[in-house]
Length: 119
Image (cartoon, rainbow, N blue to C red; front, side):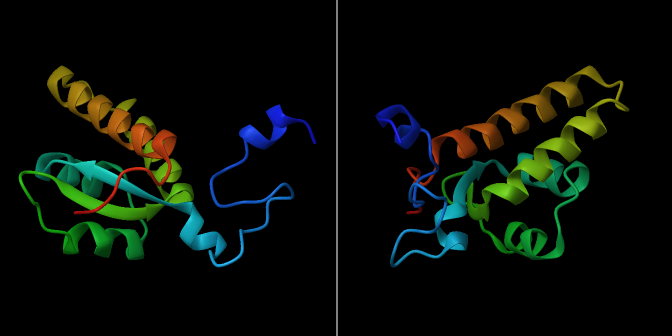
């Protein structure tokens, strides 16, 4: 394996994709999404989260105007896809811009990995 190959593997995984010792695959997959109360409501309405993720979102409380919720990358990717699908049917430009900003926040959480910490 070259150095370049090692640099692109997900955080918490070894060369063959196994979870690193002391960290389960589920734990290494978690990301922190940071969204406003309005974005949380939009995500619940248009992102169609599965029940466990929906409970996490509904159970979170805003601190200094933001909800910070730990969700697996897989589930975030599904919500981004569902938001994108929902956006195709929406004609309200303001709502489309809000949903686009929400997708950006979710994609940021995916790209930043586990670097955003809960406070």
